[in-house]
Structures are given as C-alpha cells and as structure tokens.
Length: 511
Ligand SMILES: *[C@@H]1O[C@H](CO)[C@@H](O)[C@H](O)[C@H]1NC(C)=O
Ligand SMILES: *[C@@H]1O[C@H](CO)[C@@H](O)[C@H](O)[C@H]1NC(C)=O
Ligand SMILES: *[C@@H]1O[C@H](CO)[C@@H](O)[C@H](O)[C@H]1NC(C)=O
Ligand SMILES: *[C@@H]1O[C@H](CO)[C@@H](O)[C@H](O)[C@H]1NC(C)=O
Image (cartoon, rainbow, N blue to C red; front, top):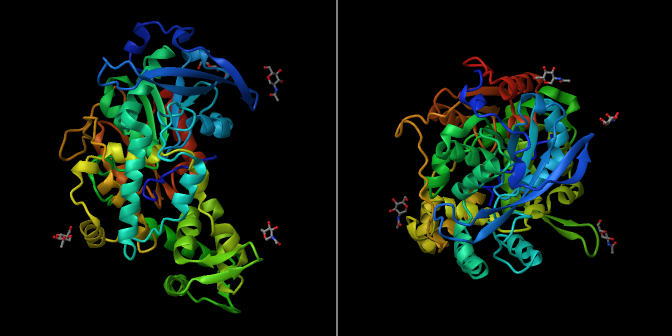
C-alpha cells in the first residue's frame, strides 16, 4: 500500500498540421450528455457518464464499466478548438472527479483560459460502476487495514495469511470483473472519452501514478499525443515488471535529510533547532539525534494516555508512515512536522499522537481499486510471482536492498499481496524503456517534470521516462516534495503554460 500510495495531494513546437485538416466540431460531444454540476471560481462544471467496454482487448464482450466524467469549462477555449486537458491525480485509486472539483480553480490559473480541464474516475474507482471491492463494507476494509501488523520482518506469517485471505475475498466479491481493472484498460477508456468528446489529440496532465497511466497511454497511442505532462514520475518498467519495486524510495532518506538541513538553516525559527534547552551545532548532529530517537522508539513505543477512551502509543511505524513520510510529500507542511517532532523530543507526546496515530490513507479506503490495479498490472503477481509461501517471500524481501532506512521495511505488504494474488495478468502491455527498447515516438514530444528530491517518485525515474520517449524534455525543479505542484514555482508554471498552450518545450537542461 505504501509503495503505491504515490497519491498526489497537489493543490494546489507548433501543432501538427494534420490536426487542422479535419475541422474540429466544437459541438461534436454527441457521445456525452453533459449536465451542469456546479461552479468553481466562476467557471461552469459539467458532469457526464460514459459506458466503456469492460474488455477493450476483446470486442465481443458486451459488458461495460460506467465511468463518471467531469469538466471545467475555460473561458477562452473556443478560440483554439475547445480542447480539454485530461487529468489524473494519482493513486492508483484517487478520484479524478473529486480532484477536479477540489483543484480545477488552481489548475485553471496555472494553464490559463485556453484549455478546458477534464477528469474521470478510472474503472473500479469511487463513482465508477461496478466498483472494485474486496470487502462488504468500508468498515471491514478499514478494520483490515488498521489491524495489519505491517512488519514483514517479524510478522511474516500473519501478513502472508492476510494477503492470501484478501486475494480470495477480492475474487469472491468481483468474480469475472476484477481482471479487467488495470492500467492498459484505463488508458483505452481515455481514448473512448477522447472520441466521445470529439477531440482528436490527447492533452494530458498526470501526477504520481498518473505518470504510469500517462506513459502507458503514450506507448499504446503514441499517434494521439499532442501534449503530455507527467509530474512526479514513477518507473514504468518497475511498475509492470518488478516483484519488488526498487526505485520508489531511493531519495526518501535524502529528502528527510533535506528537512533536517533546512531546519538547521532556519536556526531559532525551527522548533527542532534546540531540544531540552540545548541547541545543535550542525545539521548532522541534529540528524543523529533524531535517528537515535527513532531507533529507541522501535524498541520502546511511547505510551500516550489522554483520557479513558483516547489512549494508545506512538510507535516508530506510526510516526514514520503517518507523520514524517507523508510530510516529506509536501514541504509546506514541514514547519508543522518540526513543531510536532520538537514537542515529542521535549517530552510532550500529545500533538504527535493526535496528528499521527491514524493513517492518512484511511480517507482513501472507500474501495479496493489500488489493489486491483497494482496487482493486475504487474507481471510478477499471482501465478507469475517468482516466489510463493511465507518463508521464500520473507527471504526475498529481506534480501532485497533496503533503499530507505526510514520507510523500506514497511513496504512488505505489497510483496505478500503480489505473491498471493490469484488473478492472472490479462493485458498484454509491455512497457518499452531504453536501453532494451528503442525510444517511443509520440506525435508530439512530452514534458517530464520532477523535483530534485521526491520522497516517493525520484528524479531517476523521471530521467528514465524522459530518455524513453523521443524528443521528450525534462524540467527539473530544484526543490523537495512529491510532484512540482507540491512546491509551487512561477518558473515551472511559465514552462507548463507555454507547453500546454503553444507546444513550446523548455530548453534542454532547463532547471
Ligand atoms: C462571473 O461571470 C459573469 C458572467 O460572465 C460576470 O458577469 C461576473 O462578473 C463574474 N463574476 C466574477 C466574480 O468574476
Ligand atoms: C483568446 O484566445 C485567442 C486565441 O488564442 C487570443 O488571441 C485572445 O487574446 C484570447 N482572449 C483572452 C481574453 O484571453
Ligand atoms: C476523550 O478525548 C476525545 C478526543 O480528544 C474526546 O472527543 C472525548 O470526548 C474524550 N472523552 C472523555 C471521556 O473525556
Ligand atoms: C533467499 O533470497 C535470495 C535472493 O532472492 C536467493 O538468492 C536465495 O536463494 C533465497 N534463499 C532461500 C532459502 O530461499
């Protein structure tokens, strides 16, 4: 779950000639019936629903998924042919409809009034039907999540058994439908939506897991790409081909070190600069102090008693996964993290307990689409897993390199899920990455965005993506955080706007 919780909490060349040879009919929306469904910042929201083939790769099947679609109309898009930018906020499993309602007003300010914004709940997710579920109720799902020991080192047996039970429950609940919930099918759904709104060329903006969906789309439908921005990039090859994701966490510890260095630079303005009356002499000394604290916490959780119904403990796992790791996504939250950690180190555990005892993922546990997408996409899950059984999986996990001292050990659940999954892979999409495959040639080049230190989708993954698409450009934003939108920059936004509106890429090597 952690590895895949690449959810983004963003709040925040001339066109091809052939695009103009077939006149675009701005009222060609005949495939979709739009209804007004609100307004943000004086822009109309419209909602619709599209039925898509359950199995795009076997046209004889007549079953369908129903996909909710939403768009925000820009004020001056008709001047340029009423184009829509498709958005995916990540996950997998995050609702595009919810994301657009929450963020469209901000995103519209970034790209301007020349392009409509459109999003959708991918098959299996939130408002789509049938939904992807393994549990009869949200309460059961939340309970299963909360009681997971999350520790593959000591509780391998328990985690393996849970994964096997969950895999069976997913098949029981979804029957024949579950196997169609995967990224290549969702990429095909995007083409169905594009056709239904009468737009020939894809304009796309994907964050986090949305970069997996975007890269998949660009490799399946390269001729339809007009603009594609992928921000906070995940490694496509790992996503489809690795039993144990290697790359996600390679910069997590560096991002945490960055948090500590920035705190030290801020001196008295950062509450962590001095603890128990004495201040640190270097960022390294502060880092050692925190590392020691986390090591002790591993052995000895801190009990917290607030009242007779509200008590528990701060464990290393809760502090790291719910607190530190999540904060690394969004540097704007670093002052609060510093305050909560400082209180804890000074002996007041209440703020950290209140802030971090519940998982931030709980809000997303309204369906099991993340499990279906991750398991069904991956070629090493289920019957194709390289190892099966408690001991082999534990051995495999423990013998893989620990990329992040902070977080890697809590990643185990995914691997047990992959080993236990019983639905075979039903798509035949193979990602094509350099150097094994030649670069994919898209109709127009794509734009890759990354921060320098992203705790979950590292710069290295962005570089690999850039290198695998002909003419693609990488814009590195020298900041911390997951996706460039987590640390808004007018410089980045300028490039983004020129690319979406005019097709102009940043110069090579731009930062
Ligand atoms: C909203 O749009 C209407 C119609 O275009 C306009 O009359 C009104 O002034 C706008 N309101 C704001 C707050 O921009
Ligand atoms: C609308 O778009 C056209 C074509 O791109 C542009 O010339 C015009 O300045 C835009 N108008 C506004 C009000 O943004
Ligand atoms: C215990 O604390 C919680 C949260 O602070 C509060 O909602 C609840 O009313 C308290 N219960 C009692 C018995 O004081
Ligand atoms: C443990 O895992 C390593 C690496 O995957 C493998 O080489 C080794 O054979 C495994 N040992 C056992 C006993 O499964």
